[in-house]
Length: 155
Image (cartoon, rainbow, N blue to C red; front, side):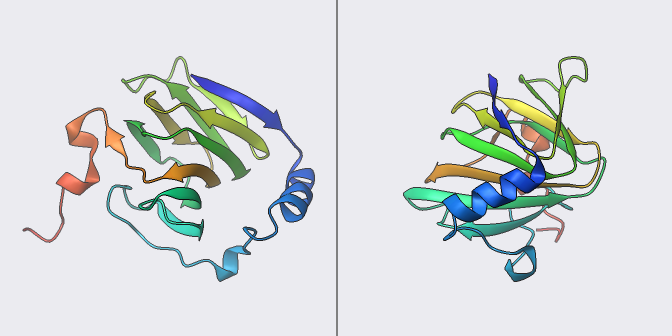
């Protein structure tokens, strides 16, 4: 189940993040954005702190254009996701369906429970920040949605 943890104004969120997580606050222009296996293109990912593949806490950001669909997936760790910019729609479930999706705007903090499938859609270009505890993985509910199984190099 998705839990709305809090809804802050963007200015309050930035001020709070700067004072509370100063060691993890990294300006976007200093992040190293990349396409990574398991995350469909054109979503770009940047690691802010930690390493999702290793034991311990991590923080990552996702940057995606408007209209991007996030296929139903689940993760082994509880996650806290903050919408830093844009409008993101999201719901819990194993089949993509517009009806139960809810709209979340910049400043919203959501909690995603370990083992619970979720899916989403970027109504606008969005910047998401996610916190969790590794090691973690992405398990797509439907095999056809997994970008790791659709290699572009022909091999």
